[in-house]
Image (cartoon, rainbow, N blue to C red; front, side, top):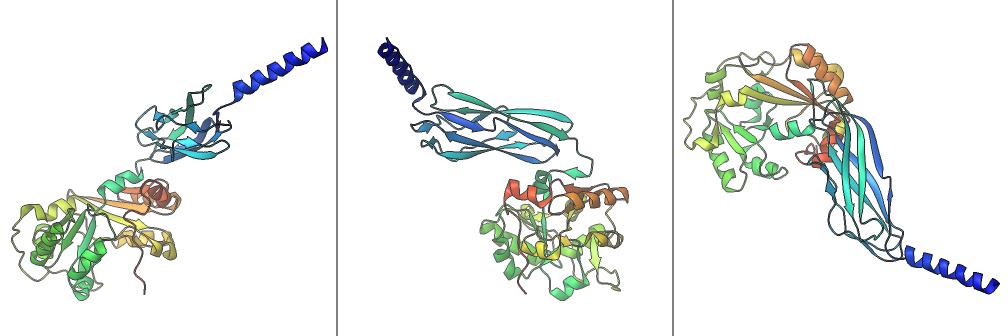
Length: 357
């Protein structure tokens, strides 16, 4: 009798081994709670996938998600026994302000016990204030202004936020940026800038345009709006007569630039700014904000001056944008989550280091 019972026990154990053999998925955690984030924040939800079975675990396809605002790419589609990997799911909170979130990621495997596993991303998205925006808004609207005149002419007067480059430097400088970057070049009259825009188009830089008429054309259309003058300089029309544009698609009207004018304030310490920043950004200490705002040139009638504030995590930048909003700049914005959120979405795209001394 004892032998018979022992045989039965061995049979049960053997049966158990058969049942638990093969690939087996273990997920930690199965629910990712991100707490509360501000609207515009990109949530990174990390799940550890482990094959605790004794045969390779395969994923029949990339994970599915419950909405287009979520993505969850797998780095590979097979795990050896005992092997783990991270599944990072991204939830874009843009447009979800004021809502409790429940988004799902569906994982499909060769585990016979769990061929389909549902992962949950949950939390609350805080509704953003009027001065708070996610990084995509700045990314889509960002524009670089390049002044092609001599450093002496640039120092005398230039457009707010413009950088000064010699024409022969522009192509090499632009090679640091994606070729579709919106770039507006200008000179004194529009002739040289138009020729450069045409040449850059031929070389693959499709986002480049020249200001029609150059700085002279700007003055004729808008006067000294958005012009930064050397202290003590007389505000007089720039020399030269605006040239007539030839290829319309290569030129942009000064009024179109002024209608949605953009400048970026980078409020990080100078050493962090030097490591990489959006081109044309103004780097200043938060304590200098009021003085800087008081020195701004006049805004064109009917135009909008978008002052984008950015820092490392959004804290100081959003305080600065709120101050600007309350002090007469209703189109001041801050990047929610700061440069960290920019890099989470776009890595180092459009970020350039300061030139070495």
